[in-house]
Each structure stands twice: as C-alpha cells, then as structure tokens.
Image (cartoon, rainbow, N blue to C red; front, top):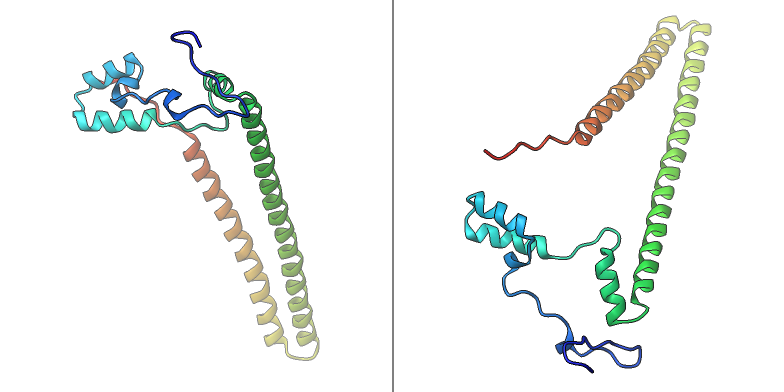
Length: 182
C-alpha cells in the first residue's frame, strides 16, 4: 500500500479499527468555520459552544446519509451504499404501510361509528313515535327531543373539534421568522 493511501476493506477481510478515521479531539473544531465564527461572536459561554458543537457533530440522517458519506462507506466496505439504500427503501415501505393501515383503520372506525350512531338515533326516534302513538305523548316527546338535541350536540361538538385541530395544525405549520442578532 502506498504512503498516505487509505486501506480498503473487502468482504472477506474487514478494515482494522486502527485504519478508521479518528474523531476530532474538539467537536467545536469539526464545525464549519462560519458557524464557529458566529458562535464566538454570539458571546455564548465555552461550555455551551462545546455542547452545541457535539450535538451538531453527531450523525443523524433522515433517511439517507449525505452522498459524501455514502461514498466513504462504499470505499471502506464495497456494497455498503447499496445496503444502506435498500435499508432506507425498506424503512420507507414499512412506514407507508403503517400509515396506510392507520388511515384505513380510522376511516373504517369512523364509518362504523356513523352507522351505529345513526341506527341508535333512528331506534330512539321510532320508540318515541311508538310512545306518542300509544298515548304517552309527554314521554314520547321528551324522548324524541332529547334524542334530536343529543344528535345536534354531537354534530356541533365534532365541528368545533375539527376547527380547533385545523387552527392548531395551521399554527404549527407557521414557522416564526428568524430575527437577525443585534
């Protein structure tokens, strides 16, 4: 192997730990220079800058690592980029299946609730009509009135909940505009 050349792993022979790149001793130094400068000018205390730097330097990908890192993985372990892409595809399919199941289940429950609720309302109204026709006008009228008032209350409550959810989602989707530091 030539001097300065990085060793490469093969499927039969893994890369030795010593050959892996070392982490920078100070996570602050791993940050891009403009970000380092901004943190220095902000007057933040050194401990907070170190914590911020450590958090920024930690790797988290959603759903894939950047192309440079994928290339690096491929250099260290041939075929690993394809494995990472396959893993991301499987995760995306799994998440989409879960979302589909959740949405379809919610729709099914919603329709069942409408049908059962409608059946109960019609049964109580029929009972109210029977009571009135049997000479129990006051009881039948009260039962029918309570039934219709309950139906209207459920409808109004459902609409107000939908309105609250819409306002809440709209508020969450509106990101505050950043202000320039003074």
